[in-house]
Image (cartoon, rainbow, N blue to C red; front, side, top):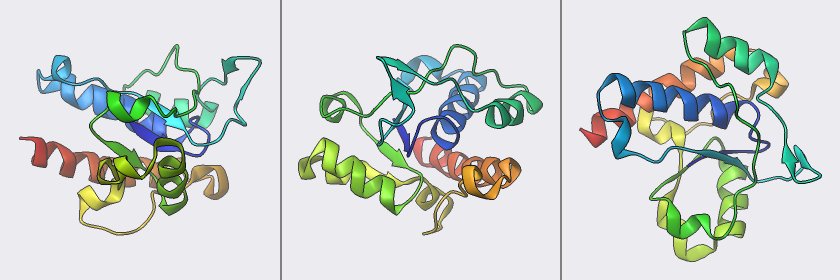
Length: 149
C-alpha cells in the first residue's frame, strides 16, 4: 500500500508505476498493490477524487494508465491486509501509524528508504514538478524491486 496525503498525486503514481514494473517482470500476480490517503479531504459523499490531471499526464507520458483510480482513505483494517505501507513523507508515516496503530509500525516505511535516502518524495501539489516526483518514486521502486528479487 502506497500512502500520501490525499491519494491523488504521489501514492497513485507509485501504485501504477509499481504495478507496471511488476507486470513487466512477470510478477504482477504476486502482489496486491494499492494506494490510499491519510486525509479524507479528497473523499466526499462516499466517493473519492480521480488522480490529479498533471499526475495522470506524467504517468501517461511514460506509457502508464491510471484510469478508474479514485482516492480512498487508509483504514485500520488495512493493517492486517497489507505487508508494507510505503509512505511519501514523515507526516504520512505519523498519520498512517495513527490510523493503523503502533502494532504496525514495522510495516510503515518511507518510500525513499528503498533508494537509500532518508528524504521525502517531492510533493508536486506544492512544487508543480511532477517529473521530480516521478524520478523520486522510480528510484525508490527500482530499489524495492531489487530487494524483492
